[in-house]
Image 1 (cartoon, helix red, strand yellow):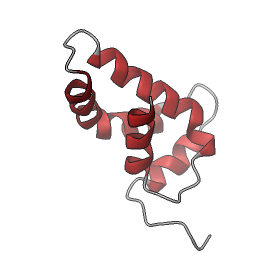
Image 2 (tube, helix red, strand yellow):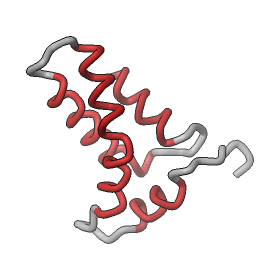
Image 3 (cartoon, rainbow, N blue to C red):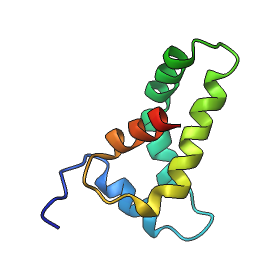
Amino acid sequence: MEDRIEDPDFELLQAALKAPEGDLRAFEELVARYHRRILANCRYLTRDEQYYEDLAQEVFVKAFFALKSFEGRSSFRHWLKRIKVNH
């Protein structure tokens, strides 16, 4: 696909998409890569010490269920940030 950009998470994304149901290892690795950054951003955005962890968890849940719709027109990192901001 011509409009696809180079993404350092491409291999993990492919593994997550092709994984059999219940095999979350690849997606868990993606979460591990971005958890600190998303958590910090949620903390900054909400300024609520009791809510930011829940918000970060919700972002990853949304990403998990929307993963099949990821088109690769941006990096996974950027796509995840958009989910966070929109949520």
